[in-house]
Length: 396
Image 1 (spheres, one colour):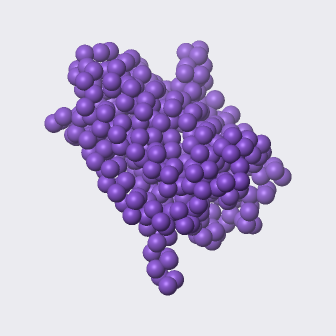
Image 2: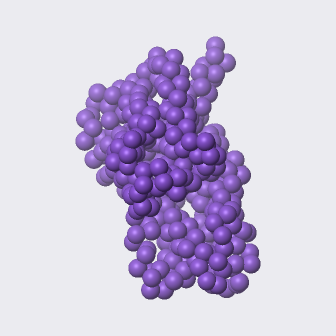
Image 3: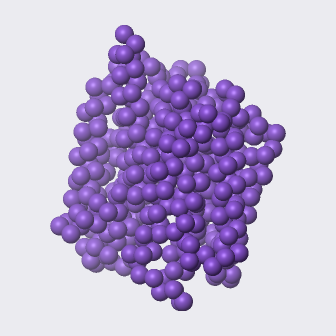
């Protein structure tokens, strides 16, 4: 009986890992095929870039509500809505006859993905035992990072034949997932029924009034904000004098952080389960502060791979730690809390390059490094406060 229950739970955890994988997998693919899309639709790069922005905006904003909607109607219906929108919009992307249809389809994809990401976190929180939650949440980071790292390679390869094949592949994969989802319908409804006690807006108000969640959301905002800003202007710096690195080398630096994150995920899970959440976050943020300080003290270009690998290890560890805390704060409203948290951090991702451009224009890459270093120190000092002490090893 117990083995049957355990098998059921693990099937739901794997389902959650797919949800964590598919959104990042689709969002990053455009980066590898921008030139092909320009030729296909006979447009300039700014129109292709707009399709990225109009994926991220609904992806960020709708997450504020998608978790609360799912807490109200139940996980099964929430996942069904999100994955259905995502599947049909992916097919729409694949058959888009012009750039306007392509952008609209990407916008709809962002709406669908906005349901999938927070629900993957909430599912893992619900179906993981507290003593191994860090390890299971590390799988969430592995799935998301694998999506980010693999999609440009796969999309680029398929574009040799036809870029539309990638989105057909995503659509078919999501339709297969929907079939599996229906086979788990009774289990999802049984273990995560709909809530009738509060309405959607009330659930969001509860989450937004929880200082613990807002602080963690601001940490997520800062990390996403400085990470995307760092990558954007590192790429610009390395492609400019005196370096003139080609795109392959620049891409290898950025990919190194992603693969380092994959390697660090099981380590992060072990540290969380055995040393505690706060202590693990302190280790990771201290490493980040030391790493970014070194850019001001040494010839950083000579050891850039090492610095980026340490950054990837540390940031992934922080993400896993904060995600583990978020799903523990209010078990009754896990979807809502995960949604608000993801909304805050992806807003940072959307705004980072734009808000930091004036700093780069005035002070160059070292201006960006200063922003990054200040952000990491804010996180480190905040983790040392009594407020954050509540997130130590003791159960929440």
